[in-house]
Length: 102
Image (cartoon, rainbow, N blue to C red; front, side, top):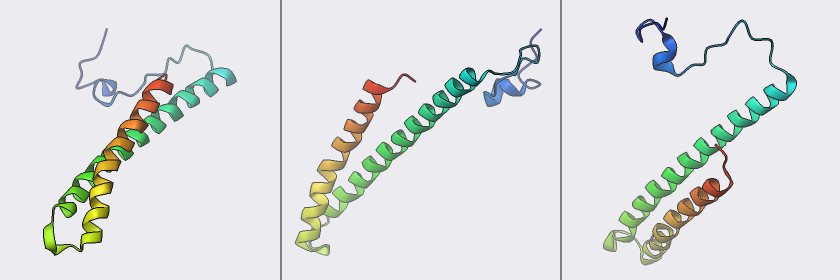
């Protein structure tokens, strides 16, 4: 019988329940589990970096459109960064999507 969600911590935390009747994890199983966890963490990091790139691109666009408050060279560089970073973020996510099995 399943516990109600308020009594079942896995219902809200997503934690895994370990079956005590199951034998210890073999070395191969542990390696596969740890590799999967590493791939999941790597994907999360790339997604965070992608979001950061997009946020930085938006800030660069604000500077590029800032008029005479910024020197012309700064505006030009910010304009190039604003155009480049979203493409880099998209490229990273495309690579992750092609190579990821998570």
